[in-house]
Amino acid sequence: MTYSYQIALIVPAAQREAAKRIAEAMGWGPDNYRVPLSDGAYYGLSAVAQPSFVDALAAAGSGTAPEGVDPADLEAVLPVLLSSIEPVGTRAQADQFDALCAQHGLTRSFEPGA
Amino acid sequence: MLAFGLSLAPGRGRAARGITPASVPGLVAWYDAFDQTTLFQSSFGGDAVSSNGAPIGMALPGNRREPELSGALTFPDLVWTDNGDGSYTRDNDSGFSAFYLNTGHSASYFIGKLIRVSFDYTLEADSPSRILVYRRGQSDQGNESFAVGAFGTSGRYDGYIRVVGPSDRPVWIDSNGGKYTIRNFRLREVVGQVLMQTTAAARPTYGASGSHRWIAGDGVDDVLQLAEPVQYQTLIMVLSHAVVQAAVVALVGAVAGGGTHYVHIADATTLSLDGGTMKTGRWKQNDGPWTSKERNPVAPGRDLLSRTPYVLSAELEEPQEFRNLLHFENGSTVRYGNVRIYGAAFYDRILTDAEHTLVYRYMAGKAGL
Image 1 (cartoon, rainbow over the protein chains, first blue to last red):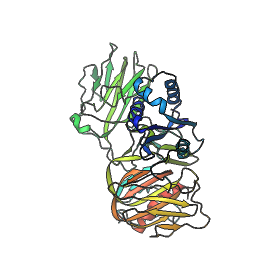
Image 2: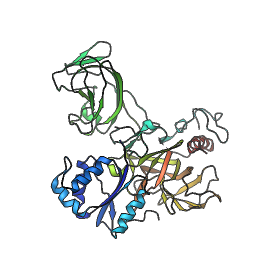
Image 3: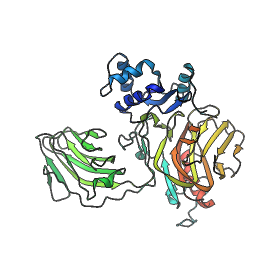
Image 4: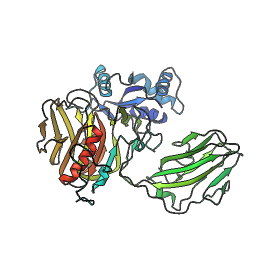
């Protein structure tokens, strides 16, 4: 299995549970989106991913729900999902995540390097 | 004191042959990224880590034990033939007919345990195209299937299962028909401090370059955890930076229950060890002098922000709990390590200087020092 992408995903707190259900249905296990942002207004994740996951995400954006995923959850999450998908090694994953946060005016609820 | 005496202490700059962190008494846990057989992509112990950048869902300690499970193996399903020589043959082309192995323990005995399963197999007439080893009972979630070859093919399965619920089977082997024989079947219970991560996004990744091997945290949400915290007092670890940037938190260990313990790279020449609410006795980098200062400039010319690995040794005044690797929490403080960890050994006591030297030399060898 080749993990050729590094991804950062962020959702508003209101859609966090639906986003976690989607991730779990896609084989990612429980409790993804565990990083609180802007005092818990948003939650994010950083991970490496296989091309099949990126393809499934793209297909979901086109209206095709991945197998096992509740379309209602997709409908709730996709419009508000913030994402960054890059080939592995483009930059440090923490930099990618922080850049996505900055792009949307979000801050981590702790200082990662202080 | 060392059980084997001090005469085996290695000379300066080289490790003694056959000496590992497990040679020194008091070892709580030892993780070694150079031993690829201890790293798996899934938290159930499936999918061995085989490529650069693969996620790590489970890391076995190098000092684990794997005692045989007691109790006679029985094969309750009549589709299996007992050949009388320790081998069993399944010849059934009439469709699905799974079985499980009764090891003499109740199902509840296995809950939460990590079990190593291994057997040899030989495909015979009407060979199946696959054999399934289920990890979670009758469900196909968490199973592992492997394709098998043509008639006459022999092979070996050697993997791990983690029993989750009371209805899960310790082992459940199935195929899509055909005839095959298994022998040398073994069930072993893994005893030791197994690190795992069930959340895919929170799994660190495996790295390899040249002679180096490491476990890398992304600095965002990666953490490996023990099921229960364990006490330690001495830590000897090989680490380097995952990225080259200032003010990276280089986490080396974490504790539950209030204490924190991490390394902070303030800039290219300043390393600090933060004991949080507990007191760090002394610590040092590589074979430099011990220091009790929390903040310590390193030798001029040594760039801490490079990816050159180094050995960190730390002794705590009192034993503390260790549960997380690459992460800690303490009240409102949450930190994730953005580092590469090549190896780490935790002891439940303060080592003598001679013992420390033995472990240091081993770790220094891993770091290429």
